[in-house]
Length: 327
Image 1 (cartoon, rainbow, N blue to C red):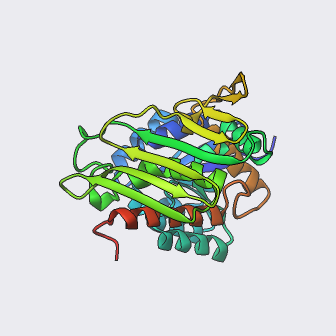
Image 2 (image 1 turned 90 degrees about the vertical axis):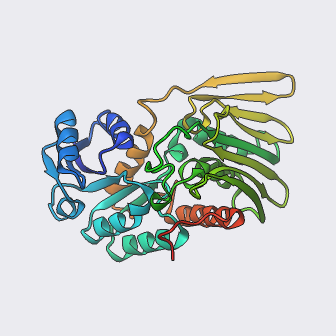
């Protein structure tokens, strides 16, 4: 078997634990290092997953020579600096979404990837989900006719969270747009591309955090209705509707395990069970790119991340969403 690809975990929180549970399912992967600003948290994670190298600072991991690629799972506002530092050390980066808080940050990450000839990909795991890949193929092949309408939502109740949490603290780039609104925006972009016009409106917490956002993306021949919220739950079923058929991605659609196709009087329910939680598929893509010595993925490229960050910026601008640390 080929030499295993050595992974480092940057930010050993809840998301990193989910990610590692899938990483362990990949035969040619091994977790060799973990870093946190808290040595105690890093050691706890290392003990839990039998990780040989533990670091109490991110720089120590980047300079250690113990990893080929890192998974960055810190709050959004640290993504850019940590990605760039890893890339400077020739280490590949899979960075949790959003890759940067704004397009300026994403551009800095992309430029660093090119400058240091190191792999960089945004962890937009839904792009690699088998059901979403299949639905995109069906849309692109004309199976549903001309695509006219996309609906996608993502919401859960979060008003009971601590105001210092990453979801509600503006200093940690809080709010729904970057955290979960990115998913509906991604789906519209994946299937319809860049809209010609964006309409959006938000509701806010008393501390300035955006809590609820509705969006309409207008295209020359189609529209997308998108929603994200922390004020209540939503069904999280995506609808993709064309002139000849409708597709529904199973809830929760961003991690769908199948879809239903309605065409004429017939319906076809297709089951596509996931391996692991769903991170497995983006890990395979990272490995494929690293083995081929590529700096970016064809399925989710640097340009895709730049486009997505541009859309996020435009929605935030429409709604008046900004963060204290942005200049």
